[in-house]
Image (cartoon, rainbow, N blue to C red; front, side, top):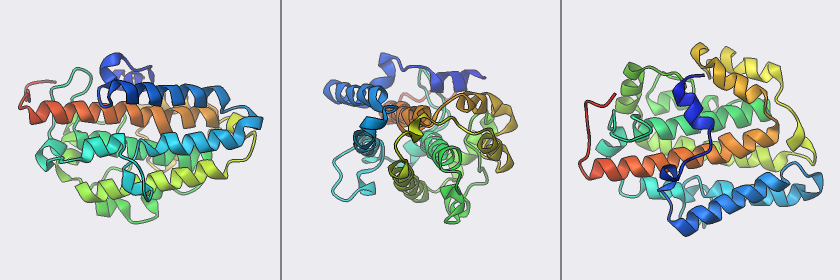
Length: 255
């Protein structure tokens, strides 16, 4: 597993939590801790689903749910200039990738893990001609993606289509998790579904490490990372990138 993949599956440091204020971070982490404690308990199934839905909503645009409260993604998208959205490379301590890449990456990870690994269903990406709408040629997750392709994606991806794809993925995730039955959070990821990710080019061959990581997880493990904490980490990175680029701290020589 390469360094970028290791960063994505480790516990976040304090510097990765700057997108929310202290009270909001504490509330989100307290909820995640509570979700972790109850998610595999069949007698807590209904509470688990309800808590997940509330928790998950904070990681998508408030447009995903009618009457939704302001969210962490809202903080990223508010007054987001297109130049800031596309800036690559960026001067940040833990990433050089653009906001465009981060938002696309978390959407792809959530799409494939929820719809292939958990539901054994079709990815959202292929239900609405999304690749064409996004104006990109990359169906994979972005793990082990080279600099040239990150630059291309950052420059070409359609902003509004990406925001709409994020909402579509989020809505489908909520259907997938809501449809789970008591006890199913304990089920292991099936090897045939891991293989589907490579057949469908959802993962690059070089990203085998992340597939191996997922293959050891239960449904609960996927819900607790790709569908929640993984989004949380990357959205906080996006907030920091936005702040730094808007302040004119870009360093084009960073590698």
